[in-house]
Structures are given as structure tokens and as C-alpha cells.
Length: 130
Image (cartoon, helix red, strand yellow):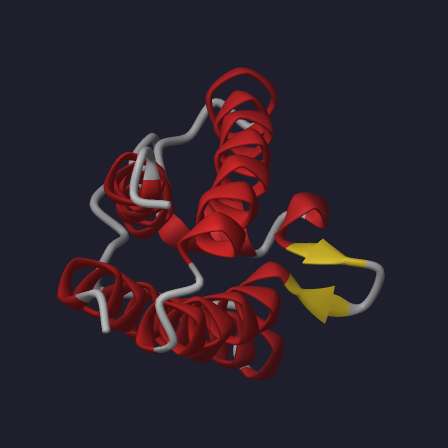
């Protein structure tokens, strides 16, 4: 078992669950303010509540929960090649979502930034491990 991959995947699951909670609360109450809402330019709800916060009708955070759970299992079974290639895809997705957040939405999402960091660290941790 790769402990680094397990810890990073656990953090990813936790962040994704929080993001899923925020997305759910936003659907119930449009005036909901998350803990990560600092001001107009630093806001999770603006990013997660945007059209880019879901893929079709499924929240990005739901995909994140599944993704990090799979990464946790792959790390447990030392499937580092799979962890590496899935991390490559996750980092590419993070680059796209960061671009959307910064340049299209003009907002910084703290939880999103932490997810991007987890993806980068998963890639680094899995690089050369197989």
C-alpha cells in the first residue's frame, strides 16, 4: 500500500464531499454562503454554482468522490501505473477548470484550488513509482 497516495486520496475524498455538500446546499438555497466564500472574488459558491460546476447534470464533486475513492483503492493495491495515468488526466482537468475559474468566471475557489493541488501531488507521488 502506498501511504502517500492513500493520504492524498483521502484528502481528495474529503474535499470532494465538502464541495458536493456546497453544491447540494446551493440547489436548496440560492443565498447559501459556504465557509470558503471570502468575498466576491474568492468564492466556492460562485465556481460550484456556475454552469461549469457540473458535467451534464452530475456535479464535478460527485465525480471527484468516485475518482479519489478509485485512487485510494489503486494505491492500496499498489497499482501505481494506473494512479499515474489517472493523475495525468486529473491534472489536465484541473488546468481546464482553473482556466475557467480564473479567466471566465474571474473567481478563485479555495476548495477547488486545494483539489488542484491534491491532483498535482498525486501526479508527483506516482511519477516514477512503477
